[in-house]
Length: 197
Image (cartoon, rainbow, N blue to C red; front, side, top):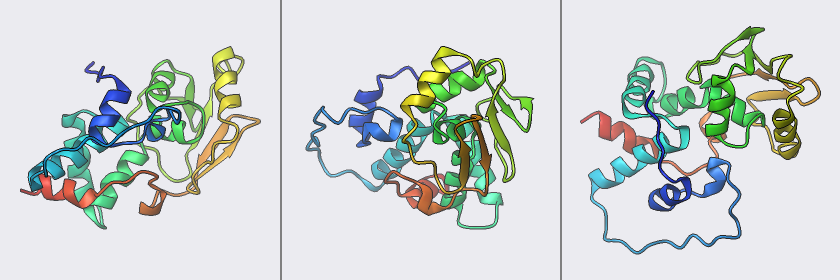
């Protein structure tokens, strides 16, 4: 299985992403903007694509597959692409506050701690649908690490397209995410332009 093992903070600095987007609280560290030459149009498009791929932890082959899925959906391609990425199970687990980062969410899903509609799902790229109920397995609820994560994320705001019950560690997908639900700066039109060449 291919994995991205780059240092997260270094990559955030390169792509111009705040570490808080990745679930890392590094407010004490300064992140100075590096002065660089003006980027070409292709450079800007490539940077946007790499930024989104890095945030969701998706490699090129799978990202292109999501782009093709987005082109077949009704709506604006860029927004559909972000909607597909947001509906990945590992991202939903992160958004519900059941993990501190998307990488940790991916590991929690891989290790079989999450159920979707009562069935164990260990595929982080599983796409959830409206009405799906995501919860922590009965066996895993007593885990010390899961309890720590839930306590740490007790004050995290859950997006409006999700509903979370912290007592039962159960979340529900109310609808698919909208463009307004994306909490980081991204120009998805540049990604669409890059792939449509």
